[in-house]
Amino acid sequence: MIPFDYERATDVDSAVATVTGDPRASFLAGGTNLVDHMKLGVAHPHLLVDVSRLPLDDVAELPDGGLRIGAAVRNSDLAAHDVVRARYPMLSRALLSGASGQLRNVATTAGNLLQRTRCVYFQDVTTPCNKREPGTGCSAIGGYVRYHAILGASEHCVAVHPSDMAVAMTALDGVVVVRSADGDRRIPLSEFYRLPGDRPDRDTVLAHGDLVTAVELPPPPAGNRSAYRKVRDRASFAFAVVSVAAELTIGDTSITSARVALGGVAHRPWRATLAEEVLVGSPPTEATFAEAAAAELAAAQPLPGNEFKVALTRRVLASVLRSLAEEARR
Image (cartoon, rainbow, N blue to C red; front, side, top):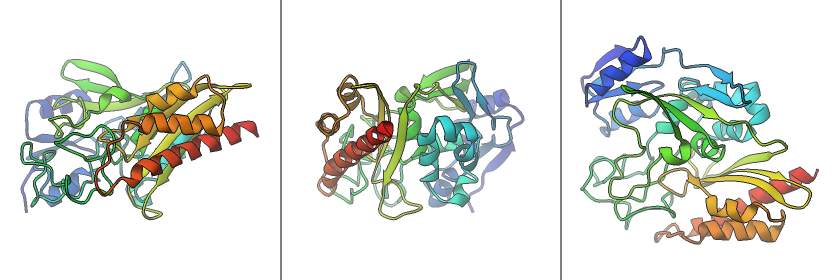
């Protein structure tokens, strides 16, 4: 047994103050990721501050037509929410493609966003890992890399972010609401996650003691079509080899808006801005979709053992865009 202290938070500010003041304290919500890491010896908090019972479990419509999702909303509840299914079907599909039903009943919105990589070397404490112990090296480089990054990696880390929900929320221009000792701030999801650089141990821009309290989604464009597609090695309870979250709005002759994010390819959910630039203003044709996918993957740097992911990502992205265009024409 590894001893640790447990404290149930009574309000947001006191929870933030407690964790901020103790460098070895951690927030605990659903525990579906943190508890696993404690069992594996990856995480060693000596104080867990339970925030699961704080009043952060509401899904509320915003005055502008957007949606505010509390940090403690369970994944299964969010996937089944009427407004999410009607206005943000991409998000509902992403949630339902992640984990198992039992885990979705426990996992929370904030916990899903903050889950750490499933790189086998990160989870194996007998191997060197710069994300787990900075400066020790990256065992994945030269090792097993089927699930590893082809975009945005560094010589210090080639791990990928595992979340499905985060990919969809990135494509939807989600904004993370964070409470710190200095008050609230809002961080666009496109700026929330870090690339590994020389500090792969830092997944996000959060400081110790920052607590995610909600995610806000803007209203979707009128007439949009969206989809989430996940390619994985088995049909359930598997992380993405590649995933695509895409939303298109198509006018009479051209694409008027496009939002695209990729999963399974980088240290963070990858916003496909180069693909979006190709798509907007272009006709919704096979040639356009192929050009958009090629533009986004032009900078890919696969490793020996995951070269297939470049062509796979290109094909999946073009296929999803094609499906959205066909749906818009019906």
